[in-house]
Length: 341
Image (cartoon, one colour):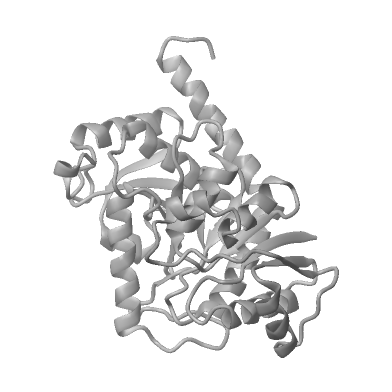
């Protein structure tokens, strides 16, 4: 049985939509257990309304503070021990649950994961991994905005390539993922759109390409946004967090503007045939943390999908595979520096 902690207070329609999403997930997977993290006085009447009862598969873990979308997420998470995302992350750290899901602000989930769980050995910062689905094949894009206001190095881009490759192998079942660097000039690893904000340049991206190739990964070069949504050409798209966040924001806007009605239980698709898969993973941290876009108007469905993804990642040994891949990166760093492996 997989045990997932779910943040009760995050997202549009919360907490009712979150409880509805938990109900859907429990019905779909009889091997699932959920800890609802939030105030019992809020959770209990909603559970009754949706026909849920506390028991072996569902319990309430008391936490009273929600981190709002306008809050300083890092400060709020660090200062409030009773913040729902921090309590959920603490449950992972203490071994009480296997994963956590939150429809609250992504910044809060990233801060809770980094502060409470810490990075995996070899990872210097977390990243957000979002999947763009298209009929020829899905691609995972990272960093999609975990870090948006700092420079990025070739090694940090390589970390994204390594963890993204593991994601594609474990979660998308791609045997040998093809990796591209997001570029304004497809086919060439060009500099980011805002080099004046210390996001690196051609040299950083070229060095990242060399490092990715040296690790034995299948590096295809620079790819454009059109390649990401077309599908079928690459399996992993690596970007700095600022550029990745802008792209994902634009894709979400397209879905909202021209999205087709979704079948029951599914999220809206953009009319060209691609869609953003619900459930964004925080990678590079010592635990399974999944963020739902709580602003989509589809919070209940998103929570249910994210819980299923978190459960599947746990059963596949997602964290252990990340740890092993990053250990290979650490070894490569040492060899490059002339040290013993």
